[in-house]
Amino acid sequence: MLKAKTLQTAVLLDVLPDEDILLVNALIKKLVIAWDPDFTKVTARERELLEKSDSEMKNGDFVSEEDFRS
Image 1 (tube, rainbow, N blue to C red):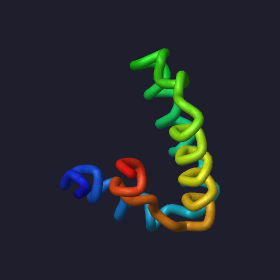
Image 2: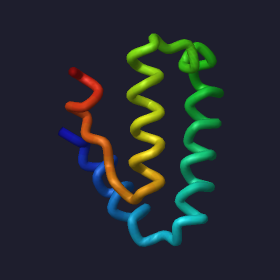
Image 3: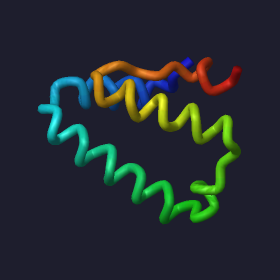
């Protein structure tokens, strides 16, 4: 289940033009890596899920939290 703030952010992102969404995603990645430099050290399965989510987000789809738990 998404947290209320996360869901609100997703709704707001949905109204942005695609090129702006790509910029926001790049900024979020930079912030996460600055906050946790080890974030980029993922398992093969985690890498696969991240690549899948990137691909789906570029198509305008969302990846559910449950996808990452399986």
